[in-house]
Structures are given as C-alpha cells and as structure tokens.
Image (cartoon, rainbow, N blue to C red; front, top):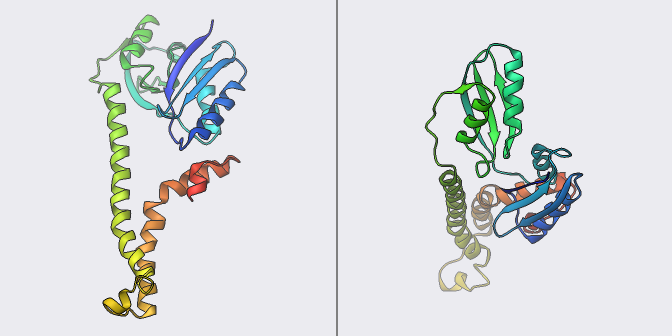
Length: 235
C-alpha cells in the first residue's frame, strides 16, 4: 500500500531547484511519484513504505543540498520496564507518517522525536504510544501550523533586515565609486583616492560577508553536492 506525504522543503532558490529535487525523488526505489512546488516551497511524494521509508526520502532531499524543516519534541513516557519496551515504542513511532527519527531512553523515560510538523503532532504520537500499551504525560504544545507560519515570518524579517542594511551601505558605496563620474568632485568637493578606496572597503565588507552570506552559503551547499542554483549565479 502506497502512502502520500506533503512536506516543506527549504533552500530552493529557483524552479531548477524544484526540478532537481523532483528528479532525485522520482529516482528512489519505492517512489511512484513526486512533485515539487517551488512557489509553495513543498514536495509531495507517493511511496511504498515497505520499500523506502520516509527518513530515506528526506535523506535524498538533503543529499541534493536542500532540507526539510523539522521539529523536535521530548515526550515523557509512562510504563516502561525493559529494553523491549524501548524497541516497541520506537517501532510504533517510526510507523507514524511524518516522523523522521525516534529515540527512547529507558533511564530518563523519555522519547526524543524529530518530525515534520505538518504531518504529525504530539497528539498523534501520544495516540500510537498509548496504542502500544504505554502512557504519555500531557504536554502544552504550540500549534504547529502557527509555529511554521512564525518561522516563515522570522525568515522574511531576517531578509528584510539584510535588505535594509544593504541599502544603507550600498548607496554611499555607489556614490564613492562613481564620485568623479557623476561630477560630484566638481560640484561638491574632491575626495583623495586613498580615502575613497578605504571608505569603499569599509562599506563593501559587511555587504559581502553579512548581507550576501545566504547566497554564498547556498552556492557552497550546491557546489558540495556537484550542482548549481540561483545562489551560484548570484554569488
């Protein structure tokens, strides 16, 4: 029986990225269909769990230089008494769609779970653990859709701050580099060449190493995996 999951993908910068991920996913054994939407920032994959697991699907995305946003939660477990309890709970959690990994510690009586927030929730995990014959202490959990929206807003805010800082720095940098060409040396005053070069260096350095850092990081990530993307072009 096949299973279809839709999960968010981060790191895409153009439609070519989506095409590359889609091709990589479709080449996986057990995957009968994969569609990646660049605009929505998500991938939809239909696969046979008996042939390929969801963690392998995510590993393929990561192997191409991209990533899927995951959440982590620690669940206090009740009723464990031996190592077989650990294996039973880990196995039950691993079967839950959206769970990437699950590690249960008998000593602390806790389960650490990494999962896709859009596909699984603490309530789902509690249900499968209780179905395996154990208990879970109630936890107050932030709404996962709201959390994902909050993370997106934070990412946009970070980009806006970089844009604002870049704009403040690039305007005087442009004026200094084009001072004579714009006739400002005649209209206003002449700037000694050494001073001009020094000021341009001071202004350009944060632009290169802070404002443009996401582009370099994205280009390097693509290069490490033998591919290119829009970050490569920009960098």
